[in-house]
Image (cartoon, rainbow, N blue to C red):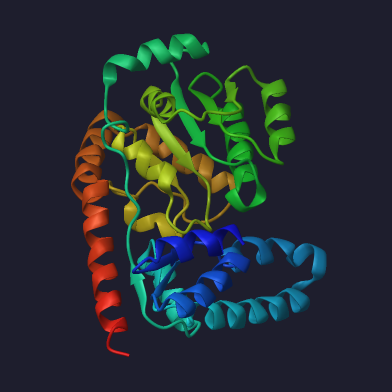
Length: 315
């Protein structure tokens, strides 16, 4: 009811909804009442992220049926919107294949005043975290969960410790249901540091700058904001090819893993670590600054807003 009261008081010219559940339907209903177009932002590709992981529990046949129903649901909900925004071309292609109309691509942005290169902080942050300045620091930022594929990251680091015990250390920022696996990894090696929670963007930027390489194990990302923030700070990224975030990587991906396995990811990390990381990171930061400032993103977004609003008035 609070949402209804706020929108009825404000009488917006346009409504944007980022929720694919109850609030999404409420936004559509209120848009009709207020005679305002409703745009949906499809942030999370939830059918892929959650249903595929449930195949082991429910079986492949049941999962396929539920996936089919999910596609029908997504198509029905978002075709009630005047436009649907997504953060990547690949996800736009998926939704179009599912029958969703008027899908538009709008990249997310980065606060470049906060997420920027600053080499002077690297040694200070490393000392504060007890990190060895002689080793390559690998960084992961995000939820510790199946849909983020963190199990592959932990297994890959375990392999690296076996074959290159004195070369790498892992810094993990985040928490989630797979924290037990992380604790087991910590118990096996002293080369793992864990910061459970970081709410301050400026502090997070310091962690990005302290790392030599950002590791992104996810294969179901719709954008990959953490990877973009890392590049904006001058730290290059290594990951697994084929996710929706491929297009936001601002440097070459020749050494990236070609398959989703711990062995392939470990090999990719080792290969990436031999590159000129400072040069890669510096060039990535320049490209991120050119393409992903919030000013540029909002210019694109408001062009779509104006177009949708103008077309809506024709009916």
